[in-house]
Length: 384
Image 1 (spheres, rainbow, N blue to C red):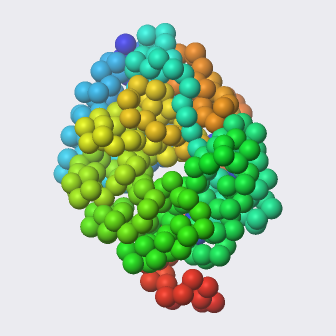
Image 2 (image 1 turned 180 degrees about the horizontal axis):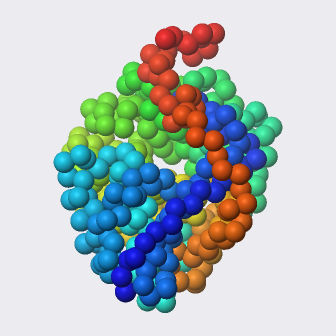
Image 3 (image 1 turned 90 degrees about the horizontal axis):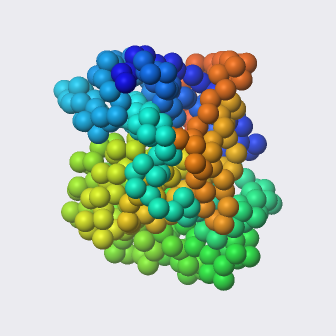
């Protein structure tokens, strides 16, 4: 079997609400979802989900190769961008190609990927995460009631700008998830919006009222000394890693004892997750993937000994995708379809109006000028 070509599609997901974090809010309730289909001469097609803007150049590395050699091909893709670097969009492209190659490998074997990777249990424990900073109190409760109805007893809220607001929301989350556990796990995500002293002061105040399981990305993702300082100053665990692009970026954080929960981004691919999980396991640290459409890393999570919990951001699928998964008992139940279990309805996707290519000037993916520089939490005008 040889890789012969690819098709790149863009569909959308309707969240039914605005999503965002402390850095900003998306302008529309619908977001683009990028799908990569890798073709072979055997008629099998591999599916990858996530942005892949550099696919035209990186694809040359795998074209004509047997996709079943996915681990070696992953290293070849990294080697091909040795001089220019593999951070950001390039690493995402490699990750989506890697995802599609693993999908092909499992399809060729006639097995779901979780079983091919050595998993025994198709159930992946998870936690609810609504990307919810734009929601009012009542809407927040309604959102997490949907998760609670699926058995979730753990959840995460976005925040970091208004202490009273965040305390109210954390208490509401505790009450909603309390139907499934006497002590639900509460997580809090600041998305790199604090400096070190802000993080310790803010979390200390939160912890006077609620028991936090972890605080996520309290300071910049690469600030090993800062993350270690925060870790020493609070009771909650420190979680980070979702935005690190490359195994080598974890080493300074691990060497500094700066992280308790090692996170991995779904869009960075299967091989990257497996390698990060192995390094974390060598230090007796748990690993937790962040959410993404179709939860591809859930398959790999079944096969590592230190998986803790999987972020679940939504209970439905993007337009034109059908995924062989269910959300039950507070987690993800994987199906038996070969590969990742993702089916693509290209006709349905073709009917979707193409998105306008307008550069983002704000929102959760654009760091605001005030991040890490706010003196008071309720300033009427952010500093510039």
